[in-house]
Image (tube, rainbow, N blue to C red; front, side):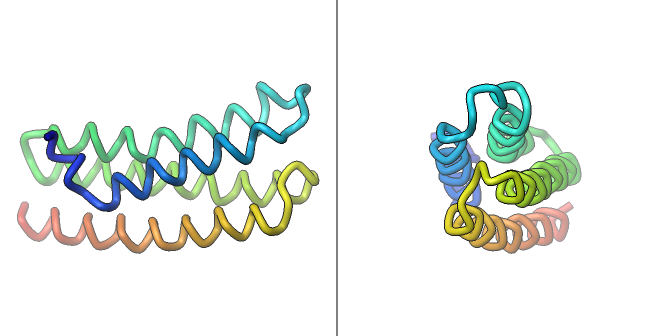
Length: 119
């Protein structure tokens, strides 16, 4: 088992990406290269950065990748609001993503704090 696979935050990030993929399937076909693509790439980037960072030699490097994951999470939050305003995403789906994002944000903050205290 890889180091990142032991992290609850990584599993939650994968769950968020699953939710984003599921919800964006309902977006209009003509948006395939707009918000659909942006939200999917940003959501996948969260778990990818956690995984990549966990493979770094130093905890300081890992902390930087956690920051990148947090930045991608903020992209998803912003993009889900825009998708809701464009009526691509229901308020219920938006609220679901928002809730998952808030929880993931807290987890990333806690992991970063723990990792950097070891650096």
